[in-house]
Amino acid sequence: MSITINLLPWREEQRERRTRRFYYFMVLMLLLGVALGWGIAKFYSMQLAAQQQRNAFIEAQTRELTADIGNLERYKADALRLGEQLVLFQTLQTQRASTVELFNALASSVASGVVYQQVSRNGAQVSIEGVAASERQVSEQLRRVADSRAFGVPSLSEVESDAEGGGRQFRFDVEQPSLSASAEEQP
Image (cartoon, rainbow, N blue to C red; front, side, top):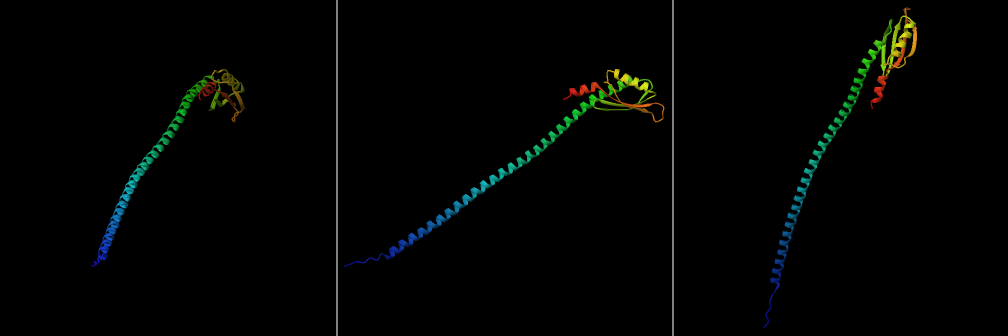
């Protein structure tokens, strides 16, 4: 007697089990892939947010430093301007003393009958215009200026008759040595 065993249903059942296991495994891998993808996306999102915060901090610091640099430039310009003003004030202070010295020397050297009409100074060079009754008084005035220790040797530029005809108008230039010496001492 022979027994026949049909293994076909058993094989079919085994195949279905293997197919189900494969599908479960595929679904599990799909879910694992989605979870892994979501985790990586979340990680990159956190890294991006952190980098954006760092960038925002750097931009804020850059703006502050740019403002500080602008303030520093203004402070430098102010310091330079103040330095220039200080030099100007020192020059004016020096000239103030020399102006007083100039007028004191001019007042002490005026000859009788001579009237100064205009006195101007450019650096150490002093230009004087005046009126005298005669040429002798003009000569006396030039001698007195030359004898003064406050002035150098005068250089007569012109002498002409007064428009009214009563005297002589004259003009001469002279250097004030004390002012030129103090100008050479300053840097």
